[in-house]
Length: 138
Image 1 (tube, helix red, strand yellow):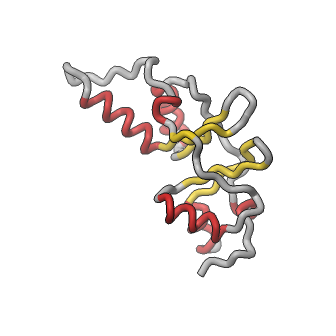
Image 2: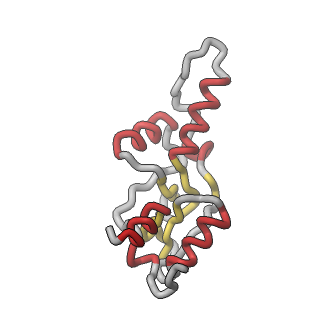
C-alpha cells in the first residue's frame, strides 16, 4: 500500500514546459522528440490550466494525417493545433495531495500524468514514472 504521508509536492517535477492551444502540431511533435518528454500541460494566456497533451495525442494526430492522406504523404501543416489534440479540463492534483491520491487517479482514469495546480497556476506535474522512481529510491 502506498503511504498517504508523502505529498505530491515531494516528488513532482517543478520545472515544467507548457504548451499553448494555438501551437502547431508540427511544433509540438518536434518539442516532444527533441526534449524527450511525454506530457505538456496546456495553459491559457494567464497561465491557467486548460488542458494536457501527451505524446500519445501527438501520435494519434500523426496517424490521422497519415491515414487520411490520399497520396500517402504526411502533411504536417499549421492547421492542426494543440487545441485539436489536447484533453480539455484534465484531472489534476494540488501540491498537498498525497501520492496515494495520485496513484488512485492514475488507475481510475487510466492516465500517466497529472498536472499539479496551486491556486490557478500549474506548479508542476507528476507522472507514473515519478512514482516508480520514488518507490525504487532513485
